[in-house]
Image 1 (spheres, rainbow, N blue to C red):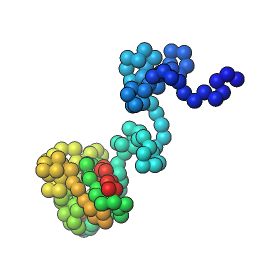
Image 2: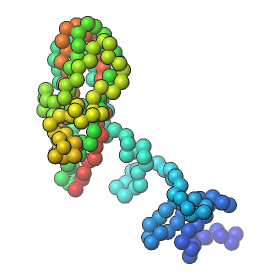
Image 3: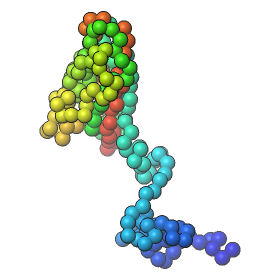
Image 4: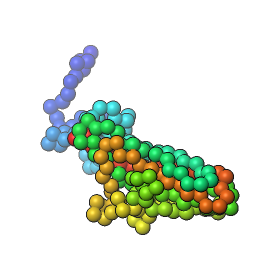
Length: 193
């Protein structure tokens, strides 16, 4: 077969199929282009494994960590994330934290929920209160007003933590509550150098 050992082309682009997309060399940068070389096209791939792998949109937008915390009587603090040990400086940039009421509050009381970098703290998400009539939806983290002091404008509404930093979900139940839960989504970047 004539092309059985084809390793490349001397051209700057390579078309896949008749009228299909092109892979293009643009001054040393690989581009995926349409057949007319007018626009970019979508490319797909698997989740990255190695440090130099390309990443997918799903990988970038996925939470760094998720937790579900249930409600019961009294006050309690649950560790929901520990910044992993480093291969370098081990800094973690917390870019976003979202709270979503996952299952309805059952009972006549109310539940105050906060996220902190200290036990009982509100440094990441200020306390938000839910009751049995609260909708199953995002309850905090989408607005600047819900952010705590670690997520200040001085840091572009992001927080920076060292390795082994604990992040806590703080629950305070007032009155009678027998069940319910909140999902916590932590988004961020772990820097290894």
